[in-house]
Length: 139
Image (tube, rainbow, N blue to C red; front, side, top):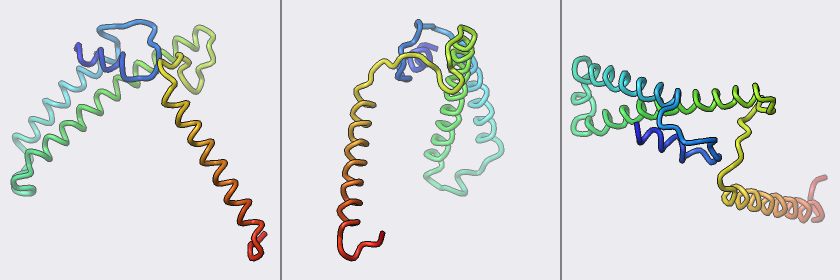
């Protein structure tokens, strides 16, 4: 529960309204993760034959599939929390029809990426103009 709470608080690049130990999305993620892990364990123990197919790599394949189940449960819970926050914002009169309107926690990376994109566009435009002035260029 602590890991999921910290994950949901720290990973999105938004300033959260407050820290919650248990949110509806975290509860859904934990319950889904337990159910998914139990069902997957039952499947691996009784119905699958990973050893016959993958040999000594069977443990790695089973672990990766279990990580996928875990990731899906965590994403489902995060989506639920995001939709609840979006509904709160809409009810509060904030224009969150497309995106949640929480302020970003840190904009350094996005500012750096935007500057690089602008430089790339300027360089591409310069290349296009340079080649459109050459004698054999097509208009």
